[in-house]
Image (cartoon, rainbow, N blue to C red; front, side, top):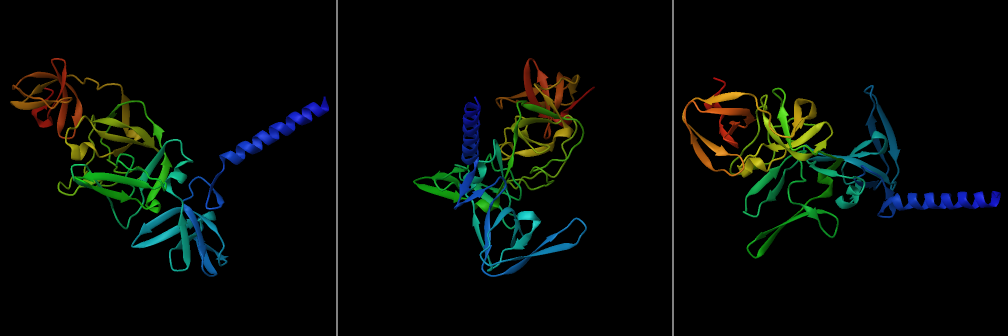
Length: 328
C-alpha cells in the first residue's frame, strides 16, 4: 500500500513539474516573465541607481556582461530609460546593450492584451486604405489600428496603394502591454460632466487625429452624453466610441472614460418629451437619412452625442442639433 501511494505521489510530482516547465516562456536562452520587455547588459562596470520612497538613492555596481531583466521603458526628451529589476533605472548610452523581446512573445502572458503607444519622443503614424494618415501619440490605444503580428512576432501593418504595399513595423519597445477586461454592455451614459481621456490613465487632448482635419477632444462630456462601448475596460477606464457617429475621423477614435463616471445601459433611457424649437434637419442614427422637423414637433429625448441630441420620433432614433430642442 505504501509503495502504491509513493508511486502516485511521484507521478503527481512529475506531472506538476512538467506543467510548470510547459508554462514557462523562454526567449534568447532564458526564462522571461510577465511585464518584461527585454534584457540589458553593460560593456563595462557601471553604477546604477534607484530612488526610494523617502527620496534617498540606493546604488548598485553592475559588472560587465551581467544580465538584467528590463520591464518598463521610458522614452522622453529624446532619451531612453530602462527600468531594471528591483526599481533600478538606467539611461541608454553606448555602455548599455539592450535586446528587445518580440511583442508577440510578450503578449503570451496576457489573456486579452491591450497595446498602448509608449514613446513620448515621437508619434506613431498609420494609414487607411483611402490613403489618409492618422497619428497616435503617447499611451494611445493601438488595438483598433489594423496591426497584426508578422513572422518575426512584431506588430506590422500593410496597406495596398495600387500595386505597392505600404508597410509599417513597430519597434516593440514603443509598445506597452497591459490586461484589458471584456465588457458585454454596448451603451454607456455619462452620469455627470466628466473629462475625456484619449488614453487609459492619462488625461489628454490630442488623441489620434487626421492630419488634414486636426480634430481633437478638448472639452468634457456633459451629463447624459451617450457613448458606445469599444468592448473593453483597461484599469478603471472604459474604452468607448462616440454614439453612432457617422464622421469616420471621429468615430474611429477610441476614447476613455472613468468607470465611476458612466452608467451601463442596454439601450438609451427616455428622459421625457422635448420639443423642436425651430425648423431643423434631423438624421437617422443608423442610416444617415435626413428629414425636416417642424417647429413644435414633440420628440422623446434620450441624451447627447457631440453637438447633437439623440431623440426618438415615430419609432425611429434620430440626431438633431442639440440647440434646436428643449423640454418646453
